Each structure stands twice: as C-alpha cells, then as structure tokens.
Length: 144
Image 1 (cartoon, rainbow, N blue to C red):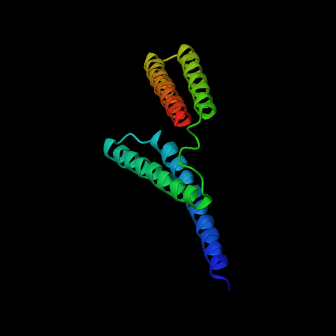
Image 2: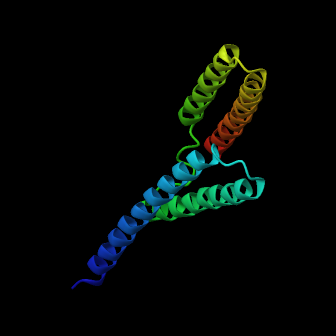
Image 3: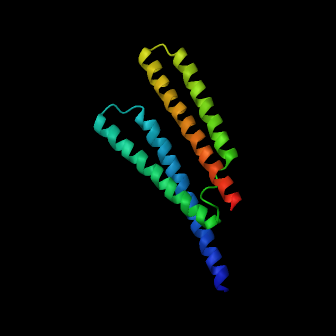
C-alpha cells in the first residue's frame, strides 16, 4: 500500500477517534453542569468545578489537534464576521438575562442574573477590542 495512503487513513482514523472523544467531553460537561445546580456541599462543588475546567481544556486541546488534521487555520473564527456574530450573540444573551432578572420573584436570583449580564457586557467589550486587533492585523498584513 502507498505510504501516503496509509498516512491518510491513519489521519482519518485519528480524526474519527478524536471526534468521538470531543463529543464525549461535551456530554460530560453538560452532565457536570446539570449536577452542579443540585450540589450544596462546597467541597463537592469545587471538585465539579475542577472537572468542568479540565473538560473545557480537553475540548480545546482536542479541537486544536482536529483543526491541525483538517489543515484549518487556528484563527479561522477570528474573522471580522465571526467576531461580529459573537458580539451579537453576547448582546442577545445580555438582554435575555436582564429580562429574566426583571421577571425574577426573588431578589437574590435577580441580582445573580444581573451579575451574569454584566459579564456578558464585559465579553462584548473584549470582543470589540479583539475585532479592532484583527482588523489592525489584517490591514497591516495587506500593506506589506
């Protein structure tokens, strides 16, 4: 068998296994997030947070390897259009959270939802700055 064909088959198999692992990690994250809402013990909550943090990191690593196999650029999502879509999503989340906060009967729940909406606003500012950086990099690359 041609060595290039063998290598391609190995890469396809690796990609398939990584995809399965990626999906399993996402499923685990969803499970841990649902469990977290019912856990009251601080030590157990801390352990679940560690599992969530590790799972996010695993997904990032696996996605990076998969992108390398695909030959995709790691900054593919960092396009002006992609960032604008993320900004729109964050704004939508912020607005939905504020509506939920207004509807909450419990002041503690309302305060928590407002706090999350402040985080969303911060995400918007980060993304806007990121858009400026990407645009600046693109314009300086086109000048060269």
